[in-house]
Image (cartoon, rainbow, N blue to C red):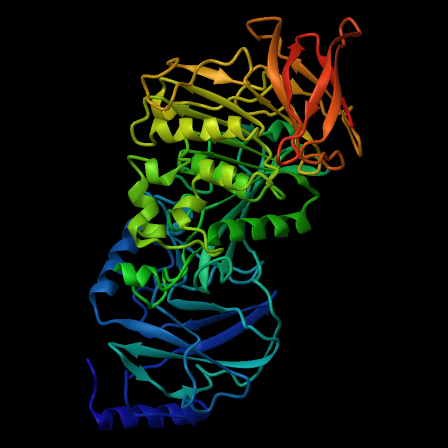
Length: 600
């Protein structure tokens, strides 16, 4: 209830006795923010304050409790906290516009759980490492300044559009904040040491939060949770897996396995908000500009905010642990299985390989989840562009992208899809497989009748969770295509071809004795012991070459030596195609291993 003007003046008189008064206005809510404090680190100033008449001051709530309180707040008068910034002490608000605005309850974090269960405890954020969570009833806002220097801040409260513009020491900083430019700190929330996590014994789990801002998010002060999972025997330097969870999952699960943990790989993960399938979303999402009509969507573009923030987290992790950034991989299931190859294909300089279970590879052709993508991209008929000007529905079509960008040296992709997966859709998966074959990219594909439970396989009998080949972004690898042991995936319809099968499941290569030089390329390849035959024929294309390059139309000599007999079994001449790729047709590969040699 709003008090009379006389009552408001009596309150102001009391404030003058309690705090040094800077400026005031007698309009707006009768109370004001108190306890404003600022912390700056790594280009970000985090402000905290005591809310006006907080919706709750209970220190312990369940998710169910929190949701009930939030619902009551949303039904009541609209309360917002406005954040002001100036390079001079703020004594008046005239001439200043808020740099941000935040609703009540900003200190609470229930997004950590993903699809939270009602009985789980509601968490509160820690804003400075080593401290306790902020008190219930606290407000939080994080600002990333565009320029370094001194800054002053003030925070006011607005109720139903009426702002209390009183400025006093409790809500206006008297001391300047020394600011720099950056993305802000990842702030440790807690460390857990469970007996087991993702079937790995005795790991260490470190949970962080960062309040993201562009280019990692469409708005600033958007908190995200992050996880670094450390295996009991961390490799030095360690491979890193970016693990992308499925629909309904979270940073603690829903991405398949903790891949290569036995080989000392770090697991890093985050929550997917919004559900853009680990790609990107419209730059006006979460802003004060509507996204309802076609005209609204066409006022902006889709940007890869999600991929940006994950790469930013990866780079930060590399500063804290001994990480091998040439051995980064992506992994995921379903929604994460869509994001994993999409990430690897579009960032081949950062991602060495990818593993994907039952992912979407062409959002336009997914019968069950096209609508989810529309929430991030707009409807296809809106013709929204990606940030580089490409129609966004083309940009995130894996098959289109592979064909459009023959110059991209994609890493190894192992993936699976169910022919009977009606939600994800089989035709788009078959289309992706054909594009990998036709553009000669390294891959392994498994399909079958397990629907949305179809799992990917690793090369060289690595099972599902361990990739025994140390694939790197700075090392050449082969693309195997048209293998004589491949099953028939068909032409795109679920009834075409073999009901279940594989492509390249039994082939592998060795990394210890690779030669990749100007004018010379050599590699040892082999057929796994569990292959149904002792030998096969397959087309072999050197990819991701560091030094060996051929010009379109250039001819090269090649020799295939059977290592078991130390005997030349093939030789011939190959001509580079229009993109400079050399493909050796029908090369013999055996369980005894073969040495492939190419000379210009």
